[in-house]
Length: 358
Ligand code: NAD
Ligand code: IPM
Ligand code: MN
Image (cartoon, rainbow, N blue to C red; front, side, top):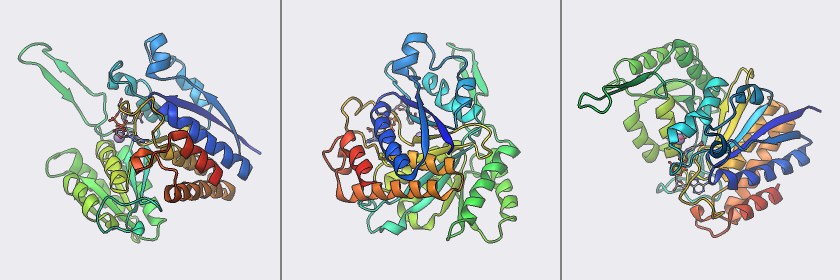
């Protein structure tokens, strides 16, 4: 039996609190389904490696992590002490970029047992994926400052859209749409205002669509698309978006489906040359950190996505994934619940209950 090597990076704030629950459930699933995991912990966080060394990770981080099958990541960020762009570009965003994790797959689902904040929506009304481009677009390092400190001060930051980068994310999204019953794809654009890169994105979209005749598709400017998420989430099946638009939609979607404390994500290197990374959509939540009240569900669901990816289609792994989702929904329905869901249970009680429901 293959042993999967997992690099565990709890990170900062609630990352450190939800990670033990993620691991607790992974261990329970691994035991039940005969999956072998070998976890190694890395203290690569602001309140960790950074405090000792002045950088988020050792310089040989790439070679170290490359030897792993997957990265299980909590959240990084301690903005009162380390500026966010230093900590995030010093770890998370490096992993995405250097390991070419070009797909950020973020399911948005109204789970059984979760009251919908949108009036009149039923469970089946919210069930789609945000497919976020994860290595280029608006998240670029191209730019700079000039005339700093003078009245002529000028700051420039370019967006980068490569044909390869755009085509591969569109292809992933169309493939996903084709595999789903609704077979519908929606693209986020803003070609009216962002008049070079977004018309290019739309042009590549129209070309790609020609290869997927069974998939229906449409596109909306990001502003009205955000409104439609709230007004008619049932319209969506697979939503593909550039890096920044996908970032925004993947907090908005889960908020429409109850709480961002549930939302998982998979940063995929679909070619499997480098490790993929599995992490909650949410961050380190300094406002609630240290109180053990964070919802561990996003961390746990991300672990389920990791098992599914590691299994690469194997039924045992798929079954482990499904069993975790089922256990999550059982606990969301029956409790215990964390305060973001209206309950008063703590993080460990919810994690323990989900593991027991497995
Ligand atoms: P956040 O996601 O950390 O928090 C936003 C709000 O949601 C907060 O009120 C928080 O209490 C709540 N929340 C988040 N996760 C929750 C959970 N599991 N259970 C209950 N409530 C939850 O976003 P932010 O406040 O913008 O960022 C805080 C820090 O985290 C910053 O340093 C930011 O850069 C970083 N961040 C990191 C990641 C990551 O590592 N993947 C993602 C987003 C933000
Ligand atoms: C996310 C986060 C990150 C992003 C931040 C922390 C850089 O918001 O994973 O959604 O913008 O991608
Ligand atoms: Mn985000």
